Amino acid sequence: MSSNNQNKIIDPDYTLLISEQQIQQRTAEMAKKITRLYRTRVPILIGVLNGGFIFLADLIRYLDIDCEIDFLRISSYGDEKESSGHIKVLKPLSADIKGRHVIIVEDIVDSGLSIQFLSKMLEAFEPASLRIATFLRKKSRLKTDIQIDFIGFDIEDKYVVGYGLDEEQKKRNLRAVYVVEHK
Ligand code: IMP
Ligand code: MG
Image 1 (cartoon, rainbow, N blue to C red):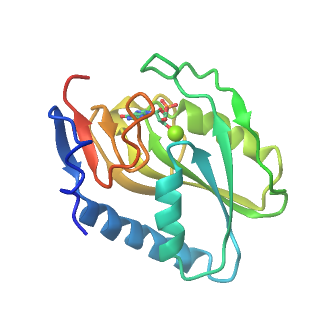
Image 2: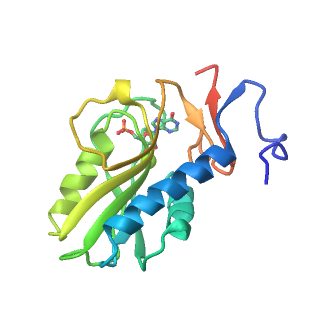
């Protein structure tokens, strides 16, 4: 499968950053590591909506262990491009994670404020363990020292779309990741 049959939704000012093939290869590697670490357990992977749903869907299909999933949704930046650190829970968890081995699955860690908030919130439910997997990380933008356990790709400080990541709620369905040059 190639990405070039999505020409109608790839804007002229998008530059390919990570190809579909690179994404699949890296996701499979991450899943291998998770499979090894959780061999004797049934982790619950918690996708952070909306952005995390595609990465979660691919990641679990490369796992060779049983797992469960759940989702939660937190408020995004709204019209702004900067994280405020004030994050609202728009859709809470359904699963009971007390005593469970939890992996939070994010699309991107930018300032890290969202994931820091989330992990503190989930710790309060007393999971047996809590790890964080993110598809992308903008390392130079981090404002917290939160530990990220599984990282797909470290990227530069550029606005990116595709593979779950949006530009004004659209473009999540692109199979590769693109830099938006005008942002
Ligand atoms: P943080 O709290 O600054 O780490 O914000 C992380 C959230 O901001 C992500 O889950 C995304 O929803 C959004 N975000 C940050 N950078 C980008 C980007 O380059 N493209 C699309 N969404 C982004
Ligand atoms: Mg997100």
